[in-house]
Length: 174
Image (cartoon, rainbow, N blue to C red; front, top):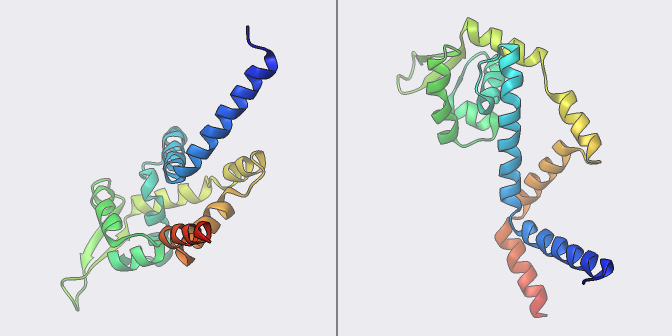
């Protein structure tokens, strides 16, 4: 029969090993967090009558602020790829939240703006901000979640993973 100390040591060793492995897959953890938030926010939005797709809220917010914008302008303001923003717009049009119109000076350029339904939905999003919920979660985990995520993103923009990897390999050689 194994002693309690031995069992605890094995459990702690496995937990430490699992932690080291999970550190390797931090991108997956970030993606899992985003997915979990999306799934858990849907019933809240349904109860509030919000029909905006969770991952398109930033577009609705930006169009409320800017009144109208092209895909390029939205992508720049939201710091998202042109393709990602463009891919979300047809669903927002289909839901009746936004409408498009061609630029009178350049027919290739399309501007998007909120419809009256989109304005109503933007107001609902503003009235029922999740900021306090995220602040509560941040307090619970003893870290400002937004600040930590922003710092990680900015750190990777300053110095990418490849540079960091190469630097560590060079340090290990020396």
